[in-house]
Image (cartoon, rainbow, N blue to C red; front, top):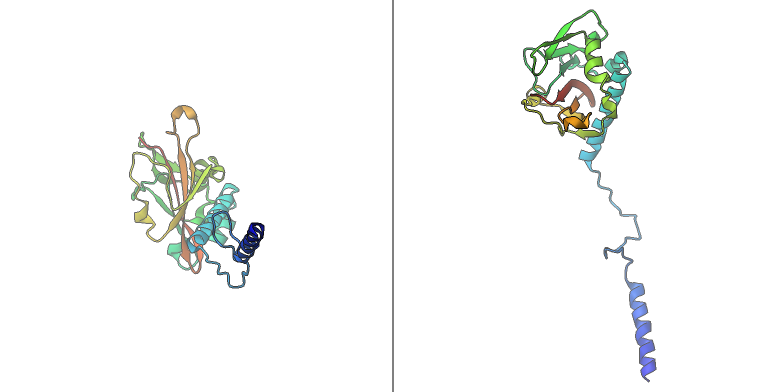
Length: 215
């Protein structure tokens, strides 16, 4: 009699378990019918991915000196203002020194401009547009930077950062080297920010801003 009761109890338990929905290890029911599954797109992540892709493409074209292709694809055409790109060797943009330049002039090796002043010495950074791109962007190979962030500045120096005053409607992708030589304990960090804004439904280049440790 006792044996029959045990058998009946085991059978009842088996039927009960079979009727329960399958679960993962965290006891959340697994939905077997996916016909009503709703996919919620993370629009912020999607836009960040687009920003990163555009910035990567711009950096690739600059490092390969394909300035005409860059101008065709990523420089604004809606009005003359959109064609102007701000360049600065530091995140503190000196309003009397920075260059707000039409990218069409970037192949002009005979045009010498003042781009800012060197931190510490105060010497003017005077060079042609191709020389500036080579010295401040191409030679550093920012496309190989170990840290890339969207709308987040990693480097911190002693100078102010007033970029928001110059790019109120823009977003940026920062390419950051935390150090080059361990003996300097991170005081030789460098970064490049690619500033982008939406115009006529696409992202266009509006600024290239370097930054580094300042005294």
